[in-house]
Length: 205
Ligand code: 5GP
Image 1 (cartoon, rainbow, N blue to C red):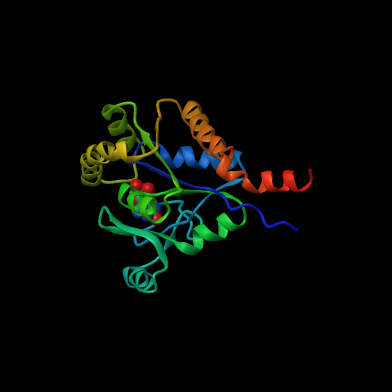
Image 2 (spheres, helix red, strand yellow):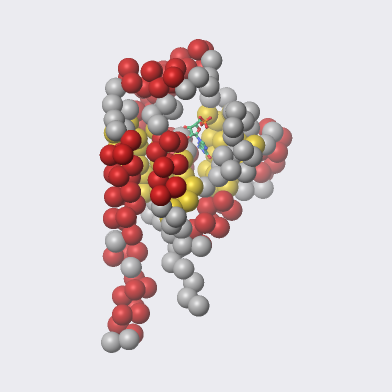
């Protein structure tokens, strides 16, 4: 049996509260050939979050052990907690032919751009700051202090969006999801992603 072609890697970043997680889970539920890499974090689980599904929840000592073992493709400190993408979580999915989404912050995105220049980066923008502030308050998961910290960080993150390959504004979930899917699908059609097909076609001519 032919080994599946390696999947592509898509970095998806956004200021928190932009609806990135909702968008990614919608995309995954409707497209079985796309998977998200499960990160490690030292942050406490939020209500409803499952270890191994949403994150691998570890303590600081465990995370630092993994850093020492060079287990991470990238890692960063975000809002006072460690977050990292392990080599294993990405490679396993990629080798099975899945397109892999890394839902990571802008520091991690920069590290991946350096390490994997073929990766494709997408930044999701809110339609306005008012909208972002409403969403952060509406989800009722963070303290007021945490929300203020996230809003001031959002400005800095949005400035960095110019380093990304694609920008998607999330003013309408369906439209934004569709745009993400178009980006992923058009990458599959790139000549560089179809070399094997061309070789097979010529071999059997
Ligand atoms: P949250 O605590 O809301 O789940 O995530 C906070 C931020 O950390 C988000 O911007 C999220 O994308 C980012 N994040 C989640 N996993 C990773 C990771 O593995 N690496 C990096 N660099 N950031 C991550």
